[in-house]
Image (cartoon, rainbow, N blue to C red; front, side):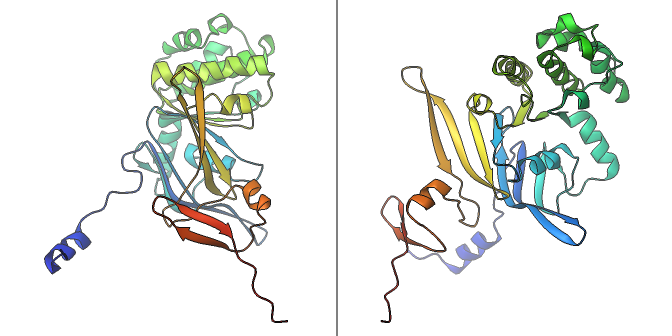
Length: 305
């Protein structure tokens, strides 16, 4: 039965659910363009991303793919050029300078790869954790508790030269957690560490995620880290290109399934290895089947000879 005119009008005026709904992090057609000496570099080219509250997500991608730019946008260090970027309901495009300062002090915590950027060398670990609390006008009694939670309580009175790289990064996580943020962002937090120490640092991030309920987003090249999260998001050429979801199988083993990401206008990025294997260039042939879409290399054009 065909819909009536009134039903069609009702559908047209009905408010559609916003992309991402009430997710903790929503990026919709996010664009970031840098201009240097008259040259424009498009770092993010309409990126879409949705992360729910309490997730532990790894962002991976080749150098120049846009993953660090995304982290800078989500941290409030960089302002997007266009699109939508929201964290905990806060619009990162329309923030005032005052709102951005509050956001960076209270809503988000950031961990750099280089430990020297995370900690002040003339302060002890406890004093480093207390500092952001004092800047926000809060009491510093939470510092010892955080250091104990992350397994570095014994470092409370030590300064940077008296700690290993792994201990410094775990203290840096405590600093990022000092003001009870809703989101922790980590840029290659294990990039300068060996595999055993990396495991300790990631265990600390996992503990913060599970015991404190904070959402954690990690940018990493480390396969040991990216394989220990429930979801890995791949970025290529400034857009999300793939997602790997992990779940526990029937026999207790971890099952990983990789998906291509379909954006809101129907674009997806085929894996480059697949394209190379089938010599796919410029155009492909599509066929709609009953339960899937087939993708084939374009047929050779007939020669005029």
